Each structure stands twice: as structure tokens, then as C-alpha cells.
Amino acid sequence: AQSVTQLDSQVPVFEEAPVELRCNYSSSVSVYLFWYVQYPNQGLQLLLKYLSGSTLVESINGFEAEFNKSQTSFHLRKPSVHISDTAEYFCAVKGGKLIFGQGTELSVKP
Amino acid sequence: EAGVAQSPRYKIIEKRQSVAFWCNPISGHATLYWYQQILGQGPKLLIQFQNNGVVDDSQLPKDRFSAERLKGVDSTLKIQPAKLEDSAVYLCASSLGDRGREETQYFGPGTRLLVL
Image (cartoon, rainbow over all chains, first blue to last red):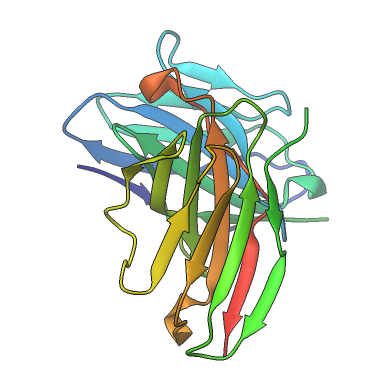
């Protein structure tokens, strides 16, 4: 069985500041890892994913995440956030089915 | 390419009433999923279809929830009778269905259900 823990339910940050959203997982089998973003009143959009290869994966809008097998983590980072990054972010793991964490609400303030 | 379509977007009903949600996946996607997202939680898989067959419905409350995908394209999720705890966003997702664990799921906008 797999599980996902997002360590922060809310992360407030000022515009242009760096941010890290933390995600830890547990699994008895190898997994694939995902970050999804959910803007208000919208469905989930895939932000980035780790399937294999380089442990550092990047999205087109400046986010990156690093797969750390020894620490069973897949933290999401961005060096400088914008107001438009305000959203709910979900970490997910897939061994068999896709299992989501409880979400982290990122609130970017001017 | 059109995304996953869902309707209605919002629904308010009283407890013990029935309700149905509709989903049309991305064209060509063989796998369709229904998720329940309760406020403050991540989505939880209710049922997964591969074409018109059920792959996983282990977390579907079968005494009140049912789902079908008769022609292997669009799908309907029904709740009868609804309970207060069914208030949630119901998300539909689809994927190609031919890449095993590497499948990327694409989500619709969801149907927000409020049971009074």
C-alpha cells in the first residue's frame, strides 16, 4: 500500500519570495510521483511528474521537484512565486492506483 | 484537443434525493476514473473503468453509489439516496489506458455537490 503526507496544509508567502511545498510518501514498491495544481473552482492540472531518470523534474512555469529515494520525499520548489501561483497543490504517488495527499494551500501575497 | 467535460458544475439537493453526474473523457482515452474530493482532503478514487469494464470499484459505496460506462466513452455516476456526508466535489479523469503505471490522468473541472 502507498500513502502520501503533505507536511503543510497552508503556506503563506510574499510575491517574489522562494517557496517549498513538502511531500513525503511511503510505499513497499517502486512508485511514480506527481504534483497537481488546483486553481479555485477548477479541476486538477498536472504540474510535473517523476517516472524515471533524472531525479530533478521541472514544469513549464518555473516549479521543480526533486525525487529523493532515501528520504522518500518529492518536495516542490519555486525560486520566485507570483500572485498567479495562488492555488491548492497536491502531491500524488502511483504504485497501482493514484493516491493523493491532503493538499497544501499556497497563498501568495503582494 | 478538448479536455474532460463534466456536467452539471454545481448541484444542490436534499438528503435522501438522488443525483447523477455526467462525464465525457478526452477523445481516444480508454480509461476513465471517478474521484470524490471532500473539502480539505485530496481526491479519493471511487471507480476506474477500462473501456466499458470496471477495473477497480473497491472504494465505491455500492449501497448508494453506482456508475456505468455503457459504450466505453462517456460515463454517469449516480447517488441514490444521498446523505449529508456525500457533499463533495466529484472529479472525472481520463487517460490513454495503454501505458500502465506511467499513465497520466487528465481531470475535468468537477461537479460540486451540496447535500442539505
